[in-house]
Amino acid sequence: MEPENNTRMLGFLLLGLSEEPELQPVMFGLFLSMYLTTVFGNLLIILAISSESHLHTPMYFFLSNLSFIDICVTSTTVPKTLSNIQTQSRVITYAGCITQMYFFVLFIVLDSLPLTVMAYDRFVAICHPLHYTVIMNPRLCGLLVLLSWIMSALNSSI
Image (cartoon, rainbow, N blue to C red; front, side, top):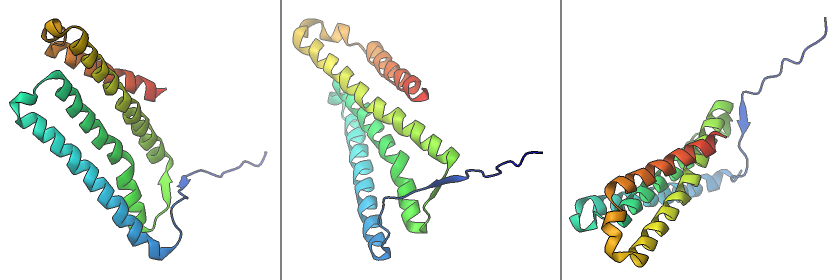
């Protein structure tokens, strides 16, 4: 019988953040303040667009979608970083790493697609101003956002 290697990888060791314990509270405060600023700023944009009826246009619909995606991008990595700083843990499981990478790639790819859709919206508004409301109807806007999500999910699955 041949000897087998019974070594199993249970997780990854996270390196790169400061090893000095006196910098941990400073880093925690910096990451937390940036995270809260990003989340509350984007929530404020979404709230302003949804509460003001004059902003119910395709451009602002895409902007609120972009704000939601920005919240999702920051929420995939920063909470884990904050918990690692707070608990002094530097390990992430293999499944946790794969899951975090999937959602990070999903939202990063998804972050650029609404910008493309917004560029198309502005193209239609400038080049075809009389037909803008007919071309950029709510159904097409919803389909463009749905297509962006589908393309991003397929890309991150690869």
